[in-house]
Image (tube, rainbow, N blue to C red; front, side, top):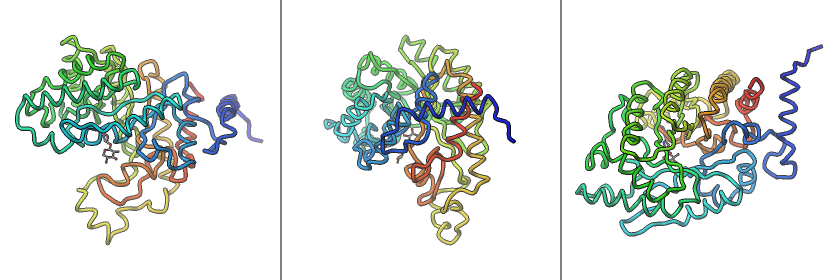
Length: 372
Ligand code: XIL
């Protein structure tokens, strides 16, 4: 007979007690809750979109607050939506999101104030540094000011760096120079004294970009301006999650006296080594470019599970430096990776499949707690 180990018994107890709270909810009540299992370690968040904020689908609506205790708006707080014209703001969905987070006692990690992408058209037409500066300050004081005390954190600046650690070209860099990041944090500190302020980027666990990111954070600190944390987005790839770089980064960033969060986690299972437009054309004749249309083969599913397991074991080891881990989407069907960088593919980067069924990766993330 198979012997039951102490670890397995402990896991069963953990799973049973995590299930106990949600018996009568219509979401997916017979599985453990990530937010409960990781309660003592860090928050578990998800990005949500407009229909999810408005709770259009009852099953998804019940599921989200069962599993997650933090939310990030996938798009609706970006400048192009919340600030469409110089003198016009549209707070409709953002206000609904605040009410949503309050209703379910979730932390709201707001995203994002200053970013080169998803800008409203009027910003791209600005021709003078003074006007860019005016936009930056007005936008931050109006948006971050309105939600101070209502959101837990803001990604004040998103993706300001190149892969080699230099500053990325953008209307902000071109018009205001390197200091625009410090200026943005200064404005956010003034407008939102009760909100945690984060710098957020992707690949900033890689050594060169990390060095640039550390220099940027030190510059903000040297100016006497508050920064509370750094977000490592965590858009990683199957079989290639850079655990060593992630660990080194958590340690080095934390040494600056700030929190290190994983803010947009997903693990891509499809190939990326080609241009979007080119492959969209080729995909029509070559189905091998979209190989997992009908589901993930076992071997890939297992690899995804062990990638997530190793990652969460590492994050648990450094839980004192991490305040939350947020997935970029609730389930595979919602992931932006179905449409980027190539439209119309079927991706499987998250813990829950298109029917909200937990994948093997989900159970490995639950099990990762076993040894901790
Ligand atoms: C993505 C959204 O998921 C998509 O729906 C949108 O079309 C484009 O932006 N880094 C970020 C996020 O900081 O805001 C991006 O979100 C994904 C990459």
